[in-house]
Length: 585
Image (cartoon, rainbow, N blue to C red; front, top):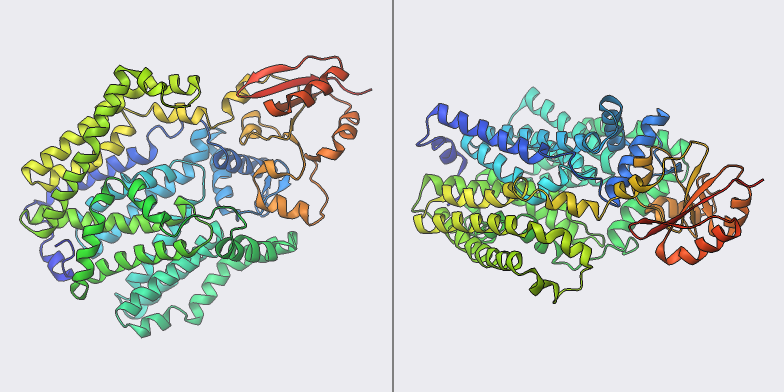
């Protein structure tokens, strides 16, 4: 089946393919991967809340020229370590402030991880399997998404995955080579910790412990904790941790107890999901590869005694990540990104075996997955075609606002084409019993979404971004202060290139857990965050104009403030209203 012993995999490397053909296939895989990661990278606005907030933290870091203590709208922001913000700040500094440059670090780390994955799979399998793994992972919707947004997960995945690669290769060598790989693994685990905290070293450590334990390699398990490895790890992590703790004495408690332990063990962050949540995420966000994974993993389990070490690694890796985060009280799709990389290699192994042996079990798995893809895509294509022809049938049954409905209806014909093309390829794969057509069918949908259907993303992003709102605001002198009353559109400071004062009950609008923690602990409020109870006094103290913004539900309060100063209230769109308040004499 897909999981042959390592010696067999090496013996079959490139069977039926010339050396030149394998190299051209690898080049094609890298070109597809580059498009999946970098294509249209800056062609849609920053999404709220994460992209807008993270890009602004990086912009403020660039402006301040400091990296140890991040700030968001001038408030200390310790929700995440500074490493990723620093990477984005460097990109903004080198190439200018834009959506493309803000997303560039995620894309570079995403492509870097694909390159590392190719190199590792070529080393432990063969070049064709490496190219297939590259294609599968690069065309996984979850991977595409996180490699092109301003968020930590792809950077974390790069260092976690490469740490696991290095730790695995360490035990494939002896002597000096083993020591070098082991030290590299410890170093990469340390950098992963700088990206997103303790999970950066916990996941590589758990994966390798379970992997070595499954092989009864107890000496290898002990070597993971060699003093020199611990020393390298702390040499990477401690300078940052100690420096930040000295600058912000409440950080050790907040970072360890609140951001790590409480996030994992309690529902305090309101991200609780059922235990089976990640099964749904894998089924949807790894589509269409997810259609063959259940049968492939079940077959691997039945033949687990004959699994090659690399196959065992990737299966253990995926299971450890999914189980670990399923136990957590806080769940988000990006948490299992490294597990999705491992599952991508499992899927690639199925395709590699199916291409080699068209009569084997792997080929049968691919054929049944192709049939399932056909069953999913064909009705979906028909539905999209009907909606494109008769949109009123859907509009009568849904409660979407008319403007949202009208925004996406023109895109339905392209969606119907993409779904139909995928169904056609899946049908050909099933009829011809050819895994290569099955691979093309699984690749088709994500690649068509990035080309034929790409316009869906900018239109969706426009509904989830502050860019359009920022564009509607008048260009005011630097002496005029922007302020938001009980609202804070994420990304607005990034697009305005200036801080925006927030008037709030508790600072919740900043979507920062640390800001909430800090204000609740009795610390002085940051300069650009004003308590609602102090709003009148704050407005009276302004000796410069204030452009005050509020959402629709706060319009009466805004109108009262504006009327007292003899100025009108203006509808600025996207459910927001504003008034330009004159300076107080």
